[in-house]
Length: 68
Image (cartoon, rainbow, N blue to C red; front, side, top):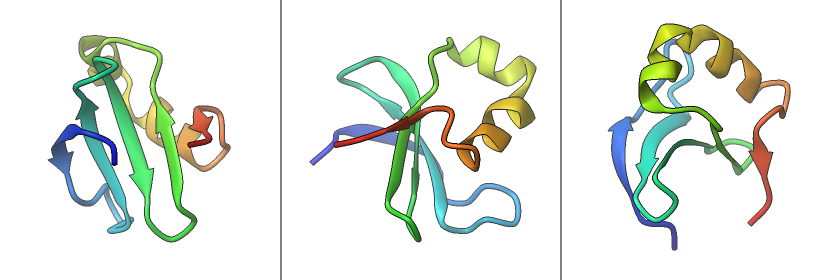
């Protein structure tokens, strides 16, 4: 079980995507329910906020996909 702080339960038109702060690794992460995708964004939260669309779009290209 991953531990984190839930930041959002839905992203735009995608209710199955959750963004959360991974407290163990201290990074912004996502989980996509339908395909059971988990990934970590390798940037600070402030960097993410400068271009959120770049990182959210990358969820669908598996750019930050992790296996667990």
